[in-house]
Image 1 (tube, rainbow, N blue to C red):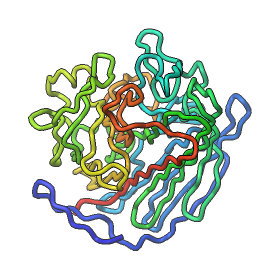
Image 2 (cartoon, one colour):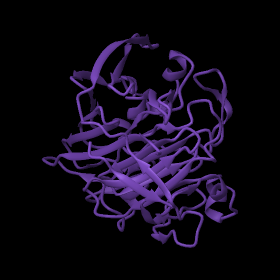
Image 3 (cartoon, rainbow, N blue to C red):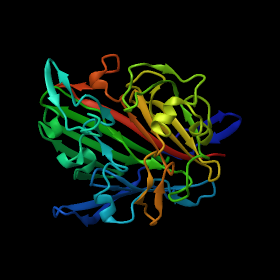
Image 4 (spheres, rainbow, N blue to C red):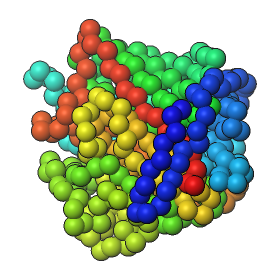
Length: 375
């Protein structure tokens, strides 16, 4: 990896610099679910001591151990206490599809044909690919692993009509790790009928380490000059609003906490950040989307993606009813999700970049989570 020196608000930072050598990958049984299916855990490790544990249940990131500025390792994703916690954990830390985020109105139309989706009966909104009572989205499915020298390819066949979505879709999500501290996620999907695809990774990060408390003291930098305001049902209004002069302006590195406590109408609606930011630069090219720093540990995360947007979510719905990996209760703000994706409700928003996939086309997407330390 090429050494990079970045300056943000007078803080000089450098990535861990080392050649992009091959990491290692192994696989082992993790548990058996209620349907008798064996869930496996894939472990990726590199020469720096990084360790990534990925479950075949939803492709969930169960652990992600990263060194701090003193070389001390900590798990920087929120986790669950046991297999049962993961098995009933919804989309917690998982791969999301067919459509990440929200679709309003109970469905969408393609070429004049209406496709109804299972939706919340009170709001008419479908979230993260489908309701649990109809089988759930891709984050609840068992993916088929194929071990690679320094990663794993997870594959899934989503049948025509799955949760109301048209087309039989074959999708692969490939995680790979290198010795430069980069965890890469590559998506590929095809369909037999016109459909809509929007995917993401829904991991909750806390660079101070799992169980360390709120991420208020983390510093956030978003490479985004616009965001999509939402209605009281958290559906985009269709407006592309400038972040300038608002609490959503993270174009320079700054602490998260003060922004979350600003009485802005959009923050009050979401009880924090739960908004799509439009990443500067051309979609389809790999470019920086978000930078996250924990000043206390010195850990730094740079997220780059080919996607047009990133949904920033400050775990606003954690209310003490869910157990974490150390048997502590998860509370609001204990983590932050940086979900690279298309905008919510794009199938019903013609002004947004299209999420349509047709037969003969290949959907691809790449996101890189690059970990380093602040010098």
